[in-house]
Length: 548
Figure 1 (cartoon, rainbow, N blue to C red):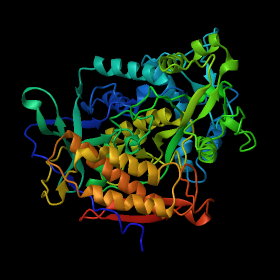
Figure 2: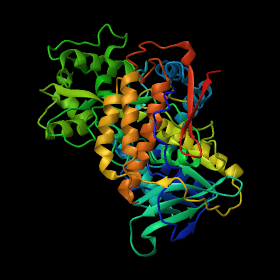
Figure 3: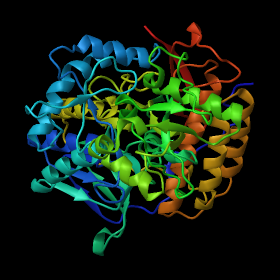
Figure 4: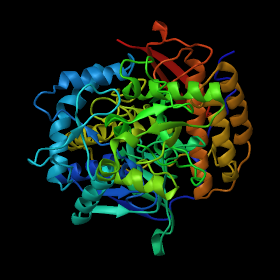
């Protein structure tokens, strides 16, 4: 039987009232992290009017939580070829070499443009950029800010730049619902729900000549994640409902070192940056032994999937819920200067890295897959673009290399803006579609959905665990609700969770951050991409595309 047979049918449209208000713009950008704000600023440089809609506040996405930094070839002794090599090794045979080449060759210029926009990165006494190393990199090429507060600094700089531009309209507390399409099928805007005052209180529509999705990830489908609560896969779910192709969603990267503490009770776990291991911290088990030695030539600095699997093996063997990161030998002065965010976070929970071992365990961190795009950020729907974690550009393959994510947002935001400026069509009126197949699930299922996904499709997967997850998702899909923000969010979670289970069930191998217990090795016949879409009735469809 096909692994898709037990999966629930999904809505092709969210149940929602018809738009009660409308506004127009040249381009609507959905999302306000590094990808969305950078795209908006580049679009403005092209002379276009831009509306940025964001789910809560402008600074509430994943970007500000990024600790480590941005990878880029900024050292004269480093080369784009070396960066590309490290990226493709981490991606375990599934990276698109052309996309990787774009990333590593255009990345340094985009970082310099970010600096010109006001981002202040850490520098050496001579004024040169301070560079560090993270897992999977064989050179020091990571720029950082505030020690371990790179994302916060990048978000600050972009936020201020956007606020200064009167032709960028910012709509906060706006949950995107569905894509609007013209008679020729082209994207021509979005519907959304805005929590606000006056005429913008409720469901409305932003009509545009192009739509850019920059909604971030989907880490909230799991019980433990480094993602904020807003990361519910809204962009991927919207794209699926609209008929776009989504690929590589089985490759969800679990960050090896999230902070485990009795004082941390929320789904979002504090991140212990890989840069700490880059500076010399190492992993130990309960006996104080370094278990990554001998598992990989780079030990604790192996690619993230390798380290996460190494930790998980220890947890499974011992029954513990964490291992330890030992940074004590780095010294209090160094730790406080280089990692002030981590020091404050752990100390607030009673753990001082200068004197204590740091309890850590893997947590869902980054979606390497997403809405399929080409090298210009174009999706399979004309006029719909995707950028950042919501997109699958082909850069990351089966496992993202550390600190390539912020770089990808910068590089492809610029490419999207250039493409839109070249090909922007006249404004078109949306064609109203029938509400057939529109519904929302009960928001009360959210925690149970997260438990189902963690047990069945988390770090370790098998045919049996995934089949159980599929049946449980089908049961949860039957619990419907009247439409509201919480119901729409959980419907998006259900949509991306179901798509992940579909791909993870089909891919019968272990590759990158997809680990199948019943298929423990990589297989040449699976060197390719699973393309997912929704049929008109909401059923999953899937094709396999071999690598060239």
